[in-house]
Image (tube, rainbow, N blue to C red; front, side):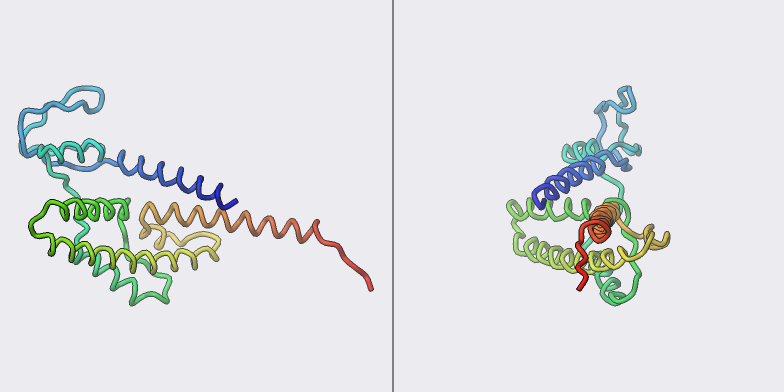
Length: 200
């Protein structure tokens, strides 16, 4: 059974990764002279212009130094602030708002740091930054997962809490809720039909 759950979760992560890459992001073009196929036609990118494109195209263009992705960076300072707020409210059903695919964006930041660690002359600074990101990531997931587990006791997530969850957290909640409901239903049915009553 655990092997089946692992397979299902692996598929869920693949779908989430695909959805993350298909998510629309704004880009600012920093170099002229390139045509890109967008919305069923070729568009010539003009330096200084902004476009909305799927993330996978934005990532490719950014790696070619053609554009800059315009979305808030997940800085270590921002991550530190979120962790602080989560820890000070650890016993309350309150969440700090995490937009969109927050953890996927954070994973991208960490991957870029790991890559630059191999090539940067300032590898000690990069290593320290990577350590900080990893520690804050662990602290954040520990706090948020504990709160999500506590939410499983509710019939539905209050709207003000659901709006503050990242897309990954919403998926985690739904997966855990489904597993819990299946277990409870299974135990309930066994209690009704599976036991033997002995009269003494």
